[in-house]
Length: 107
Image (tube, rainbow, N blue to C red; front, side):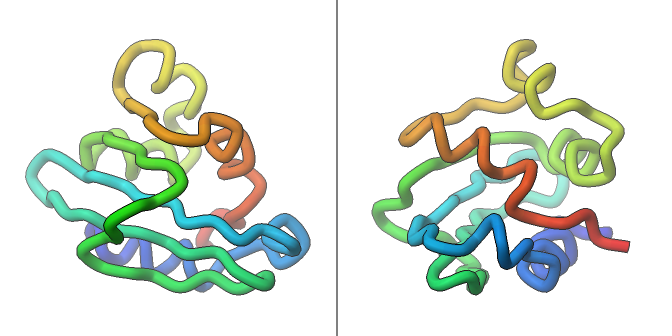
């Protein structure tokens, strides 16, 4: 999957119960061979993909395309990725903890 396809799949696989009552914008700065900036705005149980990002996200994650793909595929533990510096987080750190339940794994 390309980076864009991963984010499109994430929006299609939002977990409505985890997204309920959440009104936040998550942004990813993807580096590597398939870079890009992607934001996902979660509001009223729905998710919207914003390619190119937004000016003031609630949380920003910076990660390589390969590491992000590994996290999404379940091959790399997100906590391990953070602790080893493979993913950098700025903004509301508590939102990072909600990410694991916010999106169901694409099939």
